Image 1 (cartoon, helix red, strand yellow):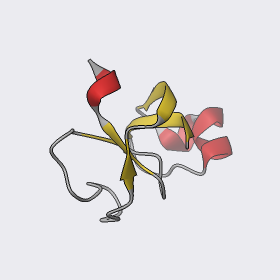
Image 2 (tube, rainbow, N blue to C red):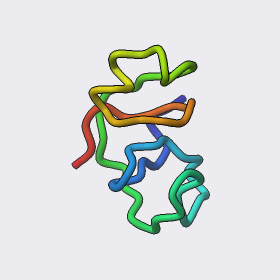
Image 3 (cartoon, helix red, strand yellow):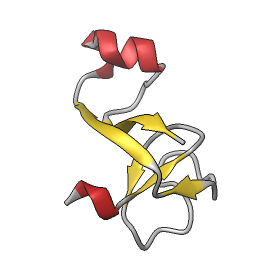
Length: 65
């Protein structure tokens, strides 16, 4: 389940709960306080990816606190 995962405050990438740094940007600013979940497979073709400024495929949180 995604609710126990950590999200990067910098890039909004969803990470495994045992990570100490973000898999995508290596930031150590991870949080459990997030909402919404989107999986982006083809960021170059996605309007959502454009709005979120996402350039890499993966799972992202919509709102990070």
